[in-house]
Every structure is written in structure tokens, then in C-alpha cells.
Length: 72
Image: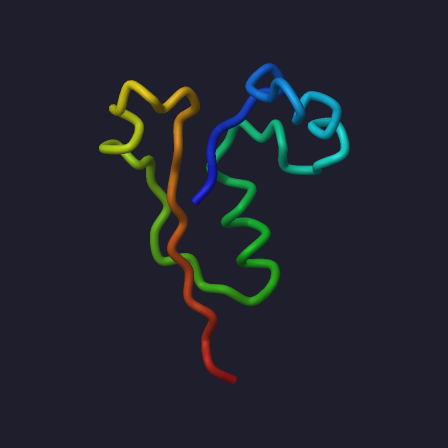
């Protein structure tokens, strides 16, 4: 699972790190599944975590990716 983060979502001790992490400001649910597929995983599900996102403590939308690595 991951979150749909913008650069401004990072603050405090993370403020200086955000520019060094390649997926730290990724506002799409497509990047993680794309990377998983490119490393041999089959994507089973991608979707928003509605229950978690409805909580008042959730500041950034969260999503889940379920993937399977086929046997070789």
C-alpha cells in the first residue's frame, strides 16, 4: 500500500528527504503497479482504501496494490 503524495505532504524531518526519493511525490496509482509488472509480478488489484481514507486522521489518500509473483 502507498499514498498519493505531493511534495507539500512531506514536512518536519522529512522535508529535506523528499527530493531524494524517486516515488515521494507520486500522485497516481499507476506507478507502483507499473514497476511491479516490470519486475515480473501479475497485478491482481489496485484500488483506493476507502475505509482508511474516510478516517479523520488520514491526511493523504491511501491505496492498495495486490500482486502475485508467478512460479517459474
